[in-house]
Structures are given as structure tokens and as C-alpha cells.
Amino acid sequence: VLSKLPNVSNSIFSTMTALANEHGAINLSQGFPDFDCSPKLIDLTQTYMKKGLNQYAPMPGVLQLREKIAEMVEKQQHAIYHPDKEITITAGATQAIFTAIASIIRPDDEVICFDPCYDSYAPAIDLCGGMVKTVSLLPNSFNINWDDVKKVFSHKTKLIIINTPHNPTSATLTDADMKQLIKLTQGTDIFIISDEVYDKVVFDGKKHISVASYPELRERSFVISSFGKMFHITGWKIGYCLAPEKLTVEFRKVHQYLVFSVNTPVQYALADFLMDESEYLLLSKFFQEKRDFFVNALRSTPFEILPASGSYFLLANYDKISDKGDLDFTKELTVNYGVATIPLSVFYKNRLDRHYIRFCFAKKHETLEKAVENLARIK
Ligand code: GLN
Picture 1 (tube, rainbow, N blue to C red):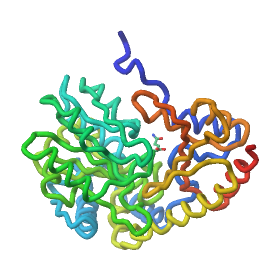
Picture 2: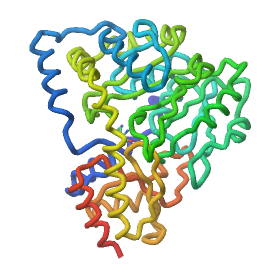
Picture 3: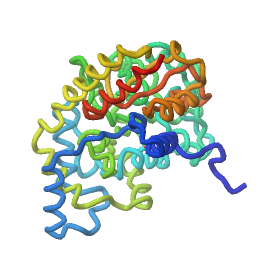
Picture 4: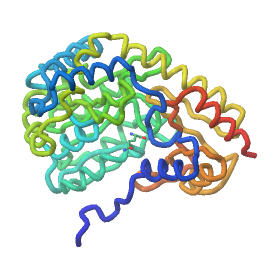
């Protein structure tokens, strides 16, 4: 058999963005901003390109950037990561997630993932011969029932993958969740991947809760984040992985043969850009305004919106509009109403379809306004 991933086809993000483009629809599907990043960041990148910093970066990343990340993480999570031994710059969070999985998963190892979850985890586990063990998030809050996690634990459990703030549900984990995770993993050799790409986007005065802040979790965790999400540069594909030295050693063994190193001038530019904390401290407020504007406008439509506590996504139920499956419904919405979204069922291992769609609200107010105008035409 040729395919190592026989059940994988084009990702829903490519599919819906292509459909949006084909029909000239407003694209609230794939998660990327429709506004530009800071011109300062572009100028800085250009400056470093003109300075001739255009060759390979050091394998783990440009040291200045790793130092700035260490400072940011210390301020925000009160966690100390050694820039040289515990921080690696990656080509986005996707590469970091793949690298972390590949560095620890062997055939038949079991990995606990939640349903729904981000789409890149399972294929990476499959490619390493690992087995995905799924735990359903609670149906309405999308919180974790830790007793359900206990039930799938076995002597083969090697890794648990969490994601907070959560894509696609916008739920966030709490201090109580972290304490449960500590209880569950203490005395075991289980590793954790904590996907925290939306760590700077948490609403309603809440604080981002990171595994990095809990020494018992920090010692077994790869903490992954993305500058794509932080600075509106999803197309630059740059992120990082924090992990204690013994895990970073293994991580870098894979990293050096997967990509060796990533974009040099961008790393220098980000190191300078990170000197101004306000560039990321204001993000939650920035996106909360968008969330509130969008949620308020959506009241003129028949969608039922779920609460969103972090990330730039929100979920909407369309039971009052249609009884179609969510994939067909999102296609119809794109073609007939000019608004592209993502069907929630694609994030479930078992394709559970509860008639929810995911909106990305990382868009200009005028884009959100136009989208709602279109959606308000639905009877
Ligand atoms: N993370 C983005 C989303 O959830 C998309 C990334 C991608 O296109 N693979 O929409």
C-alpha cells in the first residue's frame, strides 16, 4: 500500500479557503487575519535582510530571539526556560508539534487526544505508529472531565496533548485542570504537549494558564506557541517550543534533520520587536473587541452563539436554520450566502456532527459587518 495516511485528504482549511475564493465569499474559515501585521515588523525584517543576515540561522534558532522569549515567558508565566538549552525556534507551531511527537512516539505508544481537537495532531501520531486514544470534551462547555481521561490511561500511555485556548471551541483550561493533570501524571513517565498558540488571546480578564507555570508539569512538557498568531503573521510560519533540557535534546535531534533551522532575518526582527511588551499585551483586548462586535452583530441572525473565552474562533449552532450535515451546510453558506466557515465535525475523530460551525473573527470590523449582513438574509 502506497499511502501511510490512507484516511487523510486535503485539509478542511485548504478546502474552505479554495471554495471561498472560487465563490468570492467572505472567508471566516481558515484562521488568519485579513489585516496586516505591524509595519515596524516588516521594516525590521527588511533591515536585517539588507544587513545580509540571509544565511542559515543556528540550528536551535537565533540566540537573541530565544533570550527575548525566555524574558517574555518569565514575565507572563513565571517560568524560567534557559534560552540555550530549553528553547527552540520552529517553522510555526505545526512543525513544533510534529517534531515533539516524532521525538518521543514509537509504534504502539498511546497518545491521549481530546475530541474535538486541532487537526494536525492525529496524522503526526499515525506517522510515528502511535495510537490515538480519544477523550470527548464535555458536550456543552467543552471542558475536560478528568475521570474520563483516567479511564483511557494504560501502561502504553506515552503522551497527552492539550490545547489552551482551544481551537476550535475557544474553551480555556483552568488552574483546577492543571492540578488534575498533575495528579494524573505524577509518578508516571507520561509526556505532555501543550499547544498554547493562542496564549496571548484570553478574554474577560482571565489569565492564560500554562503548564509552564507548574513545575510538576513543566518537567514533562513541550510547550508550543506561534508568532503567526501573536503578531498577525501566519504566513511567516514561525513559532517555538519550550521544553526542559532532556526533552529539548531529543526535540532538536529531530528538528535538525527535519528543517535544521528556520528563517534567519525574521528571527532577528522578532527579537527586536519583542522588546516592546505592548505588542503582545494588548492582543486580548484587541481580539475581545472583535469578538464582542461580531457576537453582537450576529444577534440579527438565527445562529446560536456559544461563549468564547480565548483564541480567535467562535462556535455557532444552526439548528434553527437547517437540518443538513455541517459539511453540506458550510458549503451552502459559502455558495449561497457568501460566507465561508469551518464545520465542527472535522475536528472530531469520529466526525460527530452536532450542527456547529466555526467562525474566525480575526477580521476587520468591516469584513465582520459584511459577513453578518449576508448571514442576516438567512430565513
Ligand atoms: N490553524 C488555522 C485554523 O485553525 C489554520 C491552519 C492551516 O491552515 N493549516 O484555521
